[in-house]
Length: 619
Image (cartoon, rainbow, N blue to C red):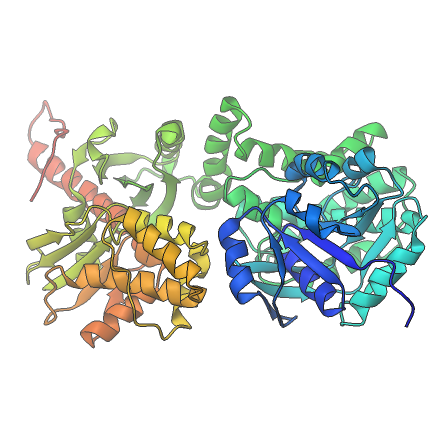
């Protein structure tokens, strides 16, 4: 066997791509050091290694685990593989340039056009390499990647074609482990980079703005048509750049995208998590090159500017995005096309100003839900709420508005104000008449509402340990444990763990979770322990097991495993109200309807009429 040119490889960035490459390079016999700034993640990897699930399965342990680039000084890598966001690359390259080994190469394993130029500008073309990756996945835990698809092959090239020997060696090593990779020329790589960027640009911004996975986007005929048009624009730009594709390229693109998994593109994940995106090196690059050749790129420009607007680049963009997001998504589907405003009917609006989100529900006189949406309840979002109210008033003839929740007294448009206890009870009564328990797990508290046979509130109980066990508690402890909220229920369901968090206070709970992490407790067990803690907070409140139990609130909507735990605890069926996060706003809309009916009845025969008093009305 010939002597290797590359012996030590460093991987910087342990997202899905970095994790997958790390496992394969180590198994191929290279000395591998891995680096990520997330110390909690790297501590878990140091203890448990990296796990790959899905279409590729591996479990690999690493001896060299770093949390700063400077630690590579002792490792002296022959090559560094960089798999980070383009927004982080410039500062990262400045750190790499300070390493004493000035002969090590850098492989750019990232998305986007011209990304490798940031590397070559600093270390030169001879030391710069580019990879195009054709696999993807999501982190289901800090050290676990679910590989959703691999459409082989991957590609690797030297930027100036001077190191074919290195690219051939690396491609052969990965291919030997079924991660098929081809060594190609720099001109071939240019075409591959454009092809991959066109594929990414066709879906990433669309999925981000529409909050859809790739699979969901590809299942909607109207969306598929839009994707094809974005690709056609990019092809016109590529042709002007003298980059040629086969005649059936669009069909091949659609086939490729159709094989993609049910996951969010990385740009969508960044946008949804309020992180900087790579839009400038994707759709933005297509727009840039289009301008160079005077080729119109209307759709790519639209997606670029919309992503930038949603990213809150400036105040005016934020205001406009808040308004247009309502108009173009929920309202365009549910309101404008139906022309509710001019139909002569009355509609009723319930607004739940909760501690985490503000929810809106509109019903008609038959209590059919016609519109629902939610916005984050933050000071900087008051303008967004103002826009929603203005749009709803424009599109509906709203006869009465009821506000509820923590901020209920601050909605100046409200005709009537009710507590969330009353609204939750009225919402539940719509689905089940009679004695019942209603458990409302909100952002800052847990409420148990006991209703009698007449649907009236007989008693209620609140948790007495600050925010312990609430939505904010869940968010903070999950973040400390580096658990994705979307994956938390699924993770917990895989655990047979029986130990809960002992700490009532969020601060102490996070400290306790840290000790679990350092002890090497599996992420599934940590998730289960968090849910058990919340379960025990709930059952300490007075719940009557002899009558039905109903669950409402935003927390239960996203943490269905809590329902399973409650059913096991009470040994009976626990009911989930439809769209539980909107239950309180739905109850408020019912109060608005009732208030309007009573006001209409009381004012009949009174020529001067009367107005609905804007004050707290608690039954």
